[in-house]
Image (cartoon, rainbow, N blue to C red):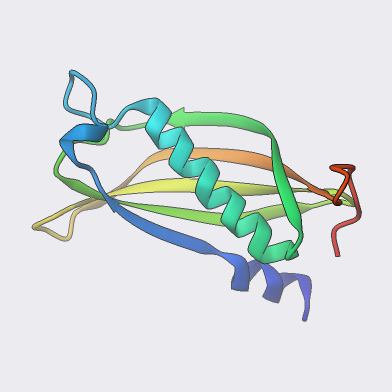
Length: 127
């Protein structure tokens, strides 16, 4: 399988409803909750790409472009954007969808770096 095919096959999409228990006093999604969901999607995409033990080593810039209101649906899309010897990067975008219309817009974007590790938690080459 080519690198491009692996990238395409490992793209990860998760949908969530934004309920009041995940919102702040402005009735929008907590930033920390958004970051947790993004890291989870990025981890799944990294693992699907490499099929190895992966750990998050950094989150690069995360841009919150729009608030995510309660009562909306969010789609998180994770895609591998870079592969090195022992590390790879995954870009995650969060899109807001209104529940009762076709309206959709990008709300958050960020990039996460992962390293492949062995049983002793030492970096190893990504296959």
